[in-house]
Length: 156
Image 1 (cartoon, one colour):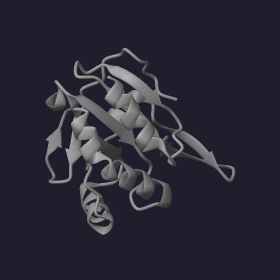
Image 2: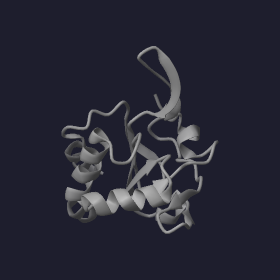
Image 3: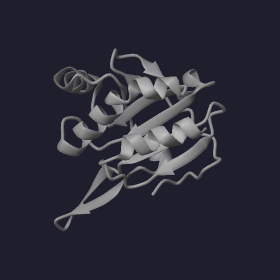
Image 4: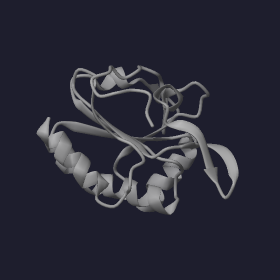
């Protein structure tokens, strides 16, 4: 679903952090980054995914990889999500129209029960230390996904 491919440079668009500040992906340059886009805080699949990445955070760190989860939810909602579920991964908000999820093509038109709406397609990007996409997982199925991404990060 992404409009980007393996080998492409990631766009350097600002995201809002949970402390109300902003950050660009270039601030994480020089290390591997797991960037996972998810639809909504505190929903069943998104909670499992965030908890799975949190459980493997130390293993990702040993592989030299940072983890960042991104949704359209506001920073205050991210903080409640983190606190409620004891998450250890960093989360960022991409609420602005024309933001990173729009640029990557993961914020797109979806359909459910005959209704069309805009929504986030669960997608994960593995970004190498040079800021290039090393791997993309489109339309992610949550079960076992974090472990699969870890194996790919360890192989870089």
